[in-house]
Image (cartoon, rainbow, N blue to C red; front, top):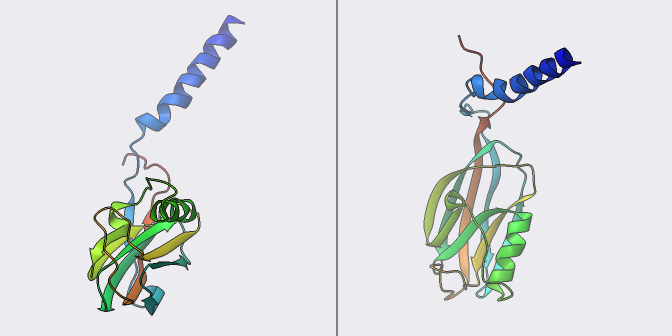
Length: 168
């Protein structure tokens, strides 16, 4: 019985230590060649004053997006790339039912007329582009008029995060 207990302790120790002993594989960005780049969204949008719009994106975990938002006519605008639950939090904050929401630094633009950024999709939830011409976001744009924006979102790479590497 004592041998079995020692054996189980040794197995448990290895079970806990092996992932820490093997060097973790650094996530790699694998850029797509020109023919593989996929357009997720490339459309003009019109957003009335004191309104917002959410556009569902066809993306999956690990997609690397190049996002360009450009105001063609009208004042500055806010945008966010968010999962569905965070969109609901943002709507609650904008409409005064809450005083907080969470967003991603690289997946937002506040008070912008033009912005380009890269963003990595971090999970397999439903993701949205949220265009805000409603206001009520700290440091965000104050609605002045109807806004016309050009939205260009392309999948330019994927983020490879699988497994461990073996020492060479």
